[in-house]
Every structure is written in C-alpha cells, then in structure tokens.
Image (cartoon, rainbow, N blue to C red):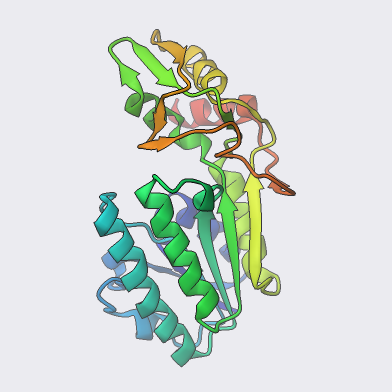
Length: 252
C-alpha cells in the first residue's frame, strides 16, 4: 500500500516512516525539501498519485498567530483537494489534546481550524490528538525560565514519548478510518511542575522549578485539566524513566 507522510522528515514523521516501511508498505516522505509543499501546492498532486493513505504531520514554519492559522488553512485546502483528485481512502492527522479548550492559544486555534477542514473535506479520516511529547520538556523548561527559576503551572500533564506517538500513528493509518478523534497520552499523569522538576533533576540541571498557577504555557493559561484527556485515551507504553534511559543512551 502506498502511504504518503506529509512532514515525513520531522521527529514523528521519520519514526512513523520507519515503522511503516518495516511493515512492508511503500512510504513516501513528503516535505518542501523533497519538492512537496502543501502551502504552495507544489508537487502535492504528483506525490499523492496512487496513494491510499495520507498522514499529515506538517507544521507551520512560523508560530505567530496569523501565520500559523494561514498555514493550516491554506495547506489543508491544498492537501484535501489533491486527496479528492487522487481518491485517497484515509486521511490521518496529528493534532493536540486540549485544542478546543484553550481559546487564548493561537496555535491551538489554528489546529482547531485544521480539524474542521478535515471533517468537511469528504475524505474518510482519523484525527489523533496527542499530549505533549517528552522530547519537548527541555524546550518547555527553557520557555518558562526566569533567571535561575522555571515557573510552571501545577495543572495536570501527561507527556508521551515520540516513539509511542509514531507507533500509534502508523497503526491508525493501517486501520479503517474512524471519521472521528482518538486521543493519546503517556502512561504517567502528574502536576506539570512536578514532571518538569523531575526532568531537570534527572539531567543534573540546577534550575529551580517554581509552582506558579499563573504561569503560561506558550502563552496559554493552564487549568487543572487543560492539557490532559478528559475521557478515554490510548496510552503509550514508554514511561518517563524508560524514555530518559533511552534518550540518554542515544546521546552518549
């Protein structure tokens, strides 16, 4: 089966590609570097020719509110038109848990717009909403740093390993379309500040994590359950300690 992965060279895309290729499928990694640009439409029709499944993992090059909304709306329209012309049977997209619960977060609002385009496209689909990746803990700490302190909300957090995300994305792509949403998260849930503090301690970072209920998460206010699934979710298998062991071994 031919599967096209939009954003196939990124963190999740490269891992998803590897999983699907091991399963014996013909997988195309589509990105601007390979001549496939969903924003301009360049190469999209050609890449999708003969494809049965499209996995959309593309991300905006800019995180400014207007730019990210324009990216997801324009690239979405270009991609869905090409899918309809190619007769694609299943559109799989990676989104974010809590997108519809953070009206002050421009990026989340753009993902909501992306989801609405998917639903209206007419192509059978599955939307995977994921919690934050464990791999981004370093960046989260950097964003929240104030001097030698890291100010983090105590809202609940349930990060997931990128390897688990990629494995689930691949499995969903090979299954029948749900025409709905599946949420995924890591196996461990704890207050946000505790997880970040645990991470910094584990890597020997001396910064002090300060619990701050007013602390923003990339501009968004964090309520107790803003960033975790509210109902049933599919959980990854890799816990924090195992992920840390693997990531440190890979870096050695």
